[in-house]
Length: 228
Ligand code: 5RP
Image (cartoon, rainbow, N blue to C red; front, side):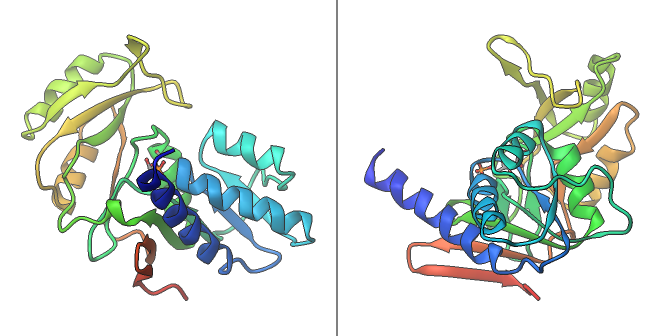
């Protein structure tokens, strides 16, 4: 690992460690997906080993595997909303809107984020952007007639590309496809328009969902929004 990579990992871990301080005993915590969320899950496992009483809901098969390996109790169903969900992001703007889904878990991530009273994003400083849309917007679509769904997305001005893994269509944990769609700068209205297309299950635009972001920076932690 280069010094620069080590610095990025340290920033992710510092953000995850700060988010661990938000957990209240006896509550349900939503676990995100990706390399930053992994630090959070590992830290939570340590706290559970030390006696913390929580249950978790995982946003991906991989996060659930990590949670189970760390002996974090899994909630199979949740009555009411979660107290807290903590997840990474691919882009974060100054108003804590996010672009997510490069890891392919966006559908379950958005369900959990939406169901939680406090959705907090953790990231290293490379994820900060002035405006969302630096990279493509991941869109989860049903495999049935996905080409028609893709054309409808194109009519909104996007350039969809079917995500591949080892030369084959990438399949999400829900057995769906991902269209990584380049739009340029994006806004909440675009998210609404994408949602209205039959065949679209979810997109990676998280406007107005996160309460706060904890950003690991070279100069220390930066908090956007309100953690409380
Ligand atoms: C997965 C996600 C991840 O949270 C996002 O891709 C950030 O991942 P990482 O922390 O590895 O940079 O949205 O669907």
